[in-house]
Length: 207
Image (tube, rainbow, N blue to C red; front, side):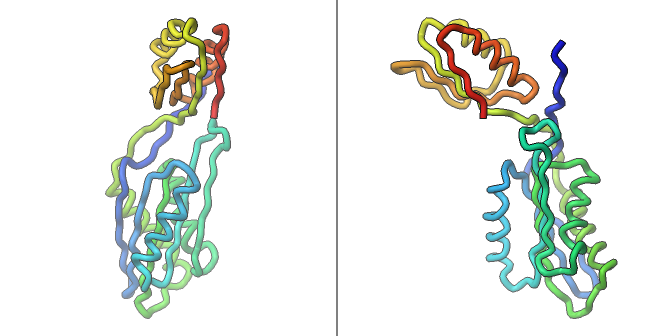
């Protein structure tokens, strides 16, 4: 009996913002849904450009679930704040809410009064919490992309498997030969690949 893979996760539906103030310092929090590590740098750089006069641009991100090909991945960045006072509290909010595929950047404008380590930890935590509280949390599925190449005689059987297991069709080409790109739930990927791969003349690849 094939074991059932848990392939659902919680994230936010759209970007959200939050704000926390303490002793003149302002902490502007920006939360973004992301899908790969390559999404992080452009967002952080854009915020650094927009808020160029801020002292710190700290962030944390989390990607994937336990069943993902790369497992759960995360990173926290203090951007010049004392170690562990910024990125880690931001990440802690993602963990406590069990959110993933998410980036939170907190931009700090210094108010002239030092907050100390406990004050900084609280500020970055509360700014992040405010942004996440205003966001719509949604459940998504972890998917894999599948490419299927097949001859015309195999089309009916391939299309029957696609209809039965309902992956999302990303693209298809029925020119000289047949080719389909599918997005399939992680829990169904192996079964669909096996079913289609057993058809004569069919080539299946997963990414």
